[in-house]
Image (tube, rainbow, N blue to C red; front, side, top):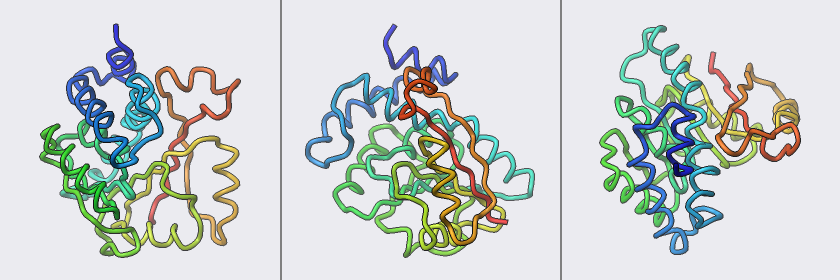
Length: 222
């Protein structure tokens, strides 16, 4: 059994195999030209990028359901600083009924993201050439980001501003210790929760290799 197939089975997302295989091969094809990710090796892309992005599906599903139960309609999710489309493209494939906006400031990467959405037939994806600071206020229900930038006062304010009331940020982060330091360094610490993530073939030994620890930091806009 391939690494991709086995990992998706562990994540209970086996139906995504065809799309994720096509996405990995597209990343391999365009990586050198667009400087997208730090490896060209198929299995490493699957583990460190695809599985990592999809590890948040269960938690993000809960956030979506929470929004719906509060009366929100036409749920819109954003991937801020999407880059190579991570985590936005895998998440959009996992939630085909939800609208995703991939926000990226670099034109060449915007072109790549549109190409990926077309190849994978992700009709629920819109790619926007923009940056967080220029986005419309109260636009998104949930904003996700991964390897974006450390949370600091100005950026936290910007990200919360683009959320609808009752919306939330979902940030893919590594060690909990670093997360706590980052959050406590903010002048006004927002209400947040940290949810441990399980990434197939990556987090099994998180206690021994701290760099393999993965968490989702959820910050609500109350």
